[in-house]
Amino acid sequence: MTILGLDHLVLTVQSIQNTVLFYQKALGMSAETFGNGRTALKFGNQKINLHEAGREFEPKATAPVPGSQDFCLVVDQLSEHILRLNRQDIDIIEGPVEKIGAIGILKSVYFRDPDGNLVELGEYQRDAP
Image (cartoon, rainbow, N blue to C red; front, side, top):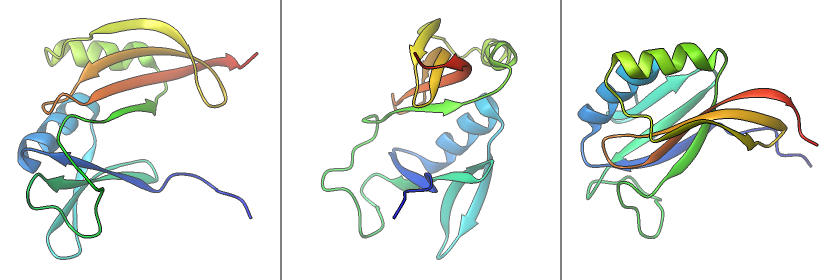
């Protein structure tokens, strides 16, 4: 039995509309409506499902709150993503810095979304030691 990957994660947010606009602008993600009017941010073969604070779908985390997440998105051409963030006036709070990712060394930058979640963009540089 093997875990193959991550299909989706869920962010609890103050405003689904503001979150969608931010991630579209910052990272070029697309919005998808599914199920009974639920919203997700799509990128590649994954998605981030959005729950609005106080209106979460069941089942949910025990104590979901906006701004409590810290996650890394693997990218290519990090320099182009940095330029895009700069053009959108999104403050990079750290980086580029070298980090150790799941399968190797990352060059990463960090910024916050509208809820204060910490978003890391990382580009693999080489295999981990």
